[in-house]
Image (cartoon, rainbow, N blue to C red; front, side, top):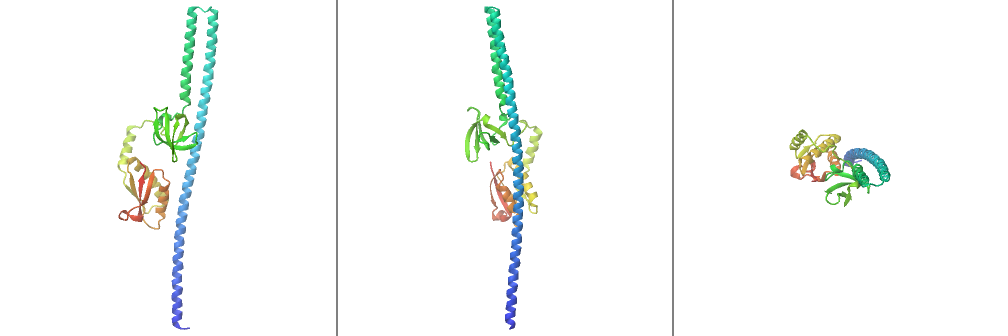
Length: 289
């Protein structure tokens, strides 16, 4: 066989070998990327499931507490009503015994008035006891359970002068609901007062928040944890947009970060940075006001 044909065949086989090797490398990188995304998604699913279980336990606990308060109020009201009836019966008997003299009738009516006022005060107390203990602490922006819908919504405004209605947004729907339809807040502070030292610490912390964070070289888990904490600080600082530097590399870290941002409640929008500010190596994040 001529040497020229042999050399041509060897060259062709070499080119095919290089092409196959490139394909294998691309497949390995794609598999690694998919595995990383799968792991990230699995962690998010597990975290969401854990939060769901936690909220369900809180809902059950508060429902039980509310039912207990209602039952206690009913028992107390029944007891007071029984005492009131006994008072009326004793008053009538007293009037009959004393042959309805002017003084005895006046005293009897006075006792009845006292009993009536006592019943009114008890009714007011029972109403206030059966109301949710966190109603007075609610603020605009709180996430609460709308009991009639069995769905969570966000408080838009508190209309105290309009029948104590609360304006909420559930998904894309806005509506007004009465206070007694408000269930469990997702994140309600346990106290209404904050010490000066805590405020000072928070103020100092927000002053030091940078408009960007560099995560190049970080593992995916560590990077996502840092972003989560960073966004909390950014929200307190009042910044409207920030830049996350993740580098280019294989794109695995960038994709994991953007998947995380896509489900974050504080993120309004995000996109790759302009070429002059990092291009594909950075992501610009716009935050909700």
